[in-house]
Image 1 (cartoon, rainbow, N blue to C red):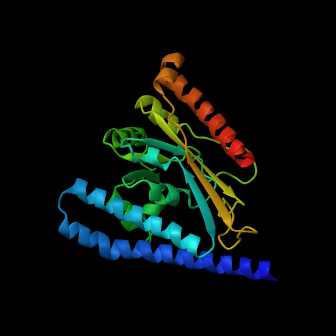
Image 2: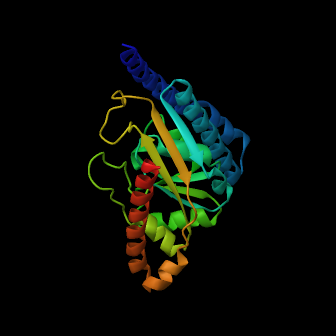
Image 3: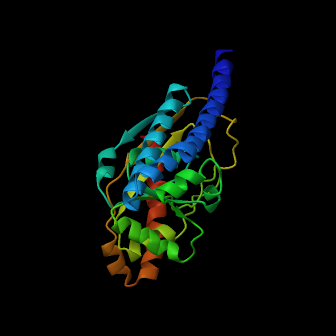
Length: 259
């Protein structure tokens, strides 16, 4: 009986958490960001302050989910994310992975779905922070490179969407193209959630049998330049790097599961 009550509470708590998230995004759009536009004229500084606001909001949201009993988390190597100009690549098991990562990176830039730019709860933060939309076509890779070179910490999920519950992990080549053409070294982050929840194709109210436990590990950088030299060209280097990233994330997430 206790387990049923506990699970029922986590369903209600998840609804409370996501309602809070939506209202918070709406408040940022209607209150904070218009005020920021009025008070701060310099665009670069306004963007930095907007990103800092989202960073702190996401930190509060993660803590709110923890207090509500939805999740626990452990983070290793977070000090590596304090450096500027990082290309941060991560695997993508759950809906809130980007929330976790932005909560760890004060000046984060992201590549977001174009549909979020028209969503009333997320449009304001995306416009104010200058996050990159994935509908910008061939210019997206160059925009991403310029963001990293400008000192932003760019967060990308090479899978492009959440990892399917069944079936192999599939990586797109865009992240590798950014790294190779930059060139930009890669700061990989592995995300593990046990038991799995908020996965692709699963409605939010279908909570796992127990509280989600997240383990987020910031790994050592991957030096890209030797891979480009070895391949002898950017196109081949991007293919090789995509394969290496696939093996890396598959291996490290499995290893962490058995640790």
